[in-house]
Length: 90
Image 1 (cartoon, helix red, strand yellow):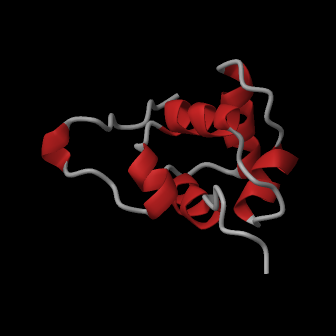
Image 2: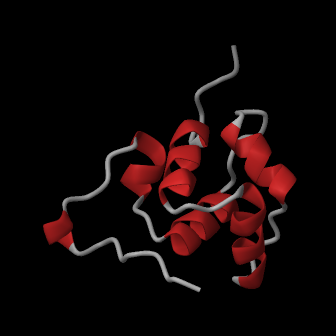
Image 3: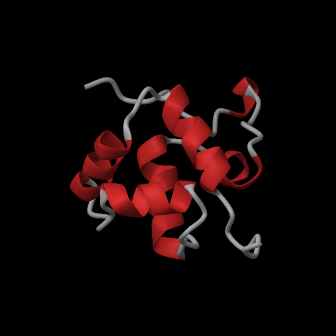
């Protein structure tokens, strides 16, 4: 079994599904935002074949507009905290 370090894969997939994004769409948004992540990188993070770097985590939080708690632990902040903005519709 692989180590649990930076194990965001399951939560990343859940957040992506909630945002109704494909892996390709998420990768494209990450690239537009200046993060060099392909669909293959997203797939490998979700399947735990790759450990997330600080750059991956920063890009995912920014593009998905989620909190670190949500990405790492699957716990979205309460609506009152105001730390999560709704996704941008394009």
